[in-house]
Amino acid sequence: MKLAIIGYGRMGHEIQDVAMERGHSAVTIDPNRSDADFVGISADSVGGCDVCIDFTHPSSAVKNIGLIASLKKPLVVGTTGWYDQMLQVREIVDKSGIGFLWSPNFSIGVNLYFRIISATAQIFNNFNDYDVMGYELHHNGKADSPSGTAIKISQVLIENLKRKDTAVYEMLNRRPAPEEVHFASIRGGSNPGLHTVVFDSPYDTIEVSHQNRTRRGLAVGSVMAAEFIKDKVGFFDIEDLISDIIGE
Image (cartoon, helix red, strand yellow):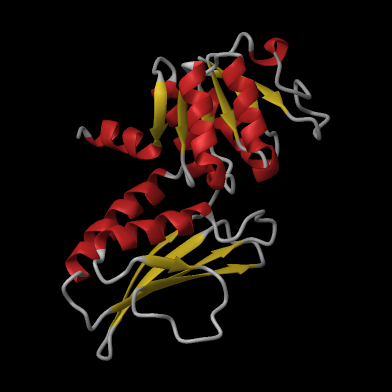
């Protein structure tokens, strides 16, 4: 399989390495990198590719999705921060007839973590003494806050805890309402990504965490997603890939 890697920063380099390890080839596209093969998305740069993978910036994600869809290429999107335009992207995908797979985090471990959090929240659902909250740490180069992963975790908690219906991500200068889940973000240093959910009662505390160690896990997941989406049509997320692997 031949991939087009859009965005040739640290993640783009990792994806290229993983693609080659798994027996694929790749071209790279980035207007800001002199070592990339191409500066832009075009028939020339992606025409011979089977799947495109986008890890760029929230400001360019939807434009890139439109360009790739117009070229009828399947697409995996790991860029975060564009989810307020999800309906527009769905329309683009539906009209173009491409295969599209997105995720706030392509780490296979993180996506197993989502399932663990879902099951844990169901266990705590009828134990009202336990409040729930969360926090995430990311390096000082992270472009968005909260992370897409933090938003996903909050959604999982709300879906599985009847007493919670709202996620709050900003600093609170007040007491949180009983129905709110507060999920805080911290930026600084070099941490590639830590997410922790806390179930706290007057008697004890239970924490469930996922700590990324390297970006390689994200790259592996994104290449696996490209392998999954290659011959498919429609709108998918990484849950479809995880279910396919597990055998659901």
